[in-house]
Image (tube, rainbow, N blue to C red; front, side, top):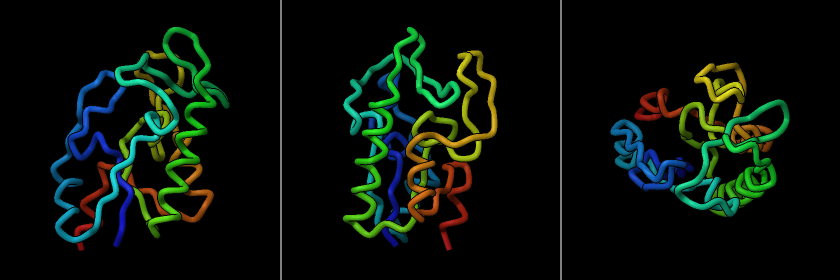
Amino acid sequence: MKLLVSACLLGACCRYDQKTAPDETVISLGKVHQLIPVCPEQLGGLATPRVPAEIKGDRVINKDGVDVTENYIRGAEQTLLIAKQLGCHAAVLKDRSPSCGCGEIYDGSFSGTKIIGNGITARMLIQNGIAVIKASDASSLML
């Protein structure tokens, strides 16, 4: 199966802090699936490194108070286009990210408080019939 995967989980230095978040379980999925790395924030035109951002209401606001919603939407649209063009039916995404978070995201206060919700990309993929699995549940795909 072709899986979209948050590029940071595969070792790319594309997180907001220009660090990586390699996840050995996610990386090992490459033994049984074709992995397609994506970084919605970069696809949406944001630089790396960049000011951290969180979802507040229906907007994505960075820690400096700048509304970056349009970048997140553009990145989600590009990610969806890649998924459709390559025939991906599922995605493994970074937990709690304002783009990729699935089921749980930060609340927009930059206090570390988590709430139920999905990131912009995760939401768009789900709305278009693409299953989204958070990285912490990736082992379920090793079958």
